[in-house]
Amino acid sequence: MITTILNIKGGCSKTLTAEMLARGYAKEGRKTLVVDADGQGDITSSLMPNINFDQPENVVGGETPPEKGTIVDYLKGNKKIEDCIWKTGVENLDLIPSSMDLFTVIYELQGRGGADFLLANALKNLGYDEILIDNNPSINKMTYNSIYAADVIICPTNISEKTLKGVMNTRGVCVQALDALPFSKPLNFKIVLTMMTRNNNCKEGAKQLRAAFGKDVFDTQIRFQQKPVQDAEFSKKSLLDMKAGVAEDYRNLTKEVIQKDEVHA
Image (cartoon, rainbow, N blue to C red):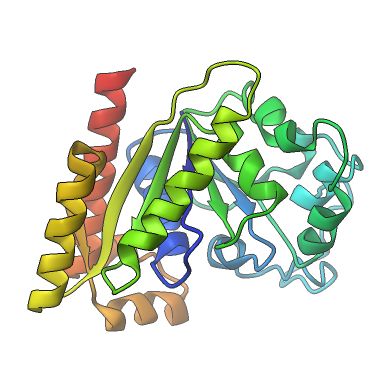
């Protein structure tokens, strides 16, 4: 199953959701690959904090293996996709890392034939149970690559004045991309509510979103708890292993996603 995590609106815990699902899959014994399609490299930094892929010579504990590459190397044709896969040190969890050079490569891909299908062609036969693609909150060549590669698209969203518009715009980009294909590919678009609080505006916004999208919204909601998220980030530990409500929410989300995937398999 290839899952794209996408919201063209930022600030909605998109990368955190991608990381927690990946770690959750791995804990369930599923061989999992994360593809960092964001030049900011946030999920790369979280999963492999000892390597700065923007300065690959800066490695804690040794040199970067010369045969290894990043998503940039694959897109430029310098490496096979298999040579861009790194072990994270977490059992069952591998990573194709990113770097700031991805932004330049995205520009270079403009007008290149078949450039929208580089990920779809590369990821389909790698032998993983789960592949998750984390994206930049924008629309570019990697956005289309991620949409075309995906079996399911999960859109994390917080509740704000612009929430519904952000989700609708993200879904609209997906619809337009799939409509442009010369063959039929159905859209499997799901929504997860993140950064949820107990205030009435948040509850009302969630109600409106569920009314608009129905069963495409996951039952599990991710509560807003800033301290455990920050503690996990600075301690280099997994939030999923912490005794916090937000961690419990992500564990429950993983179970719900797996259950729904199995129903539709």
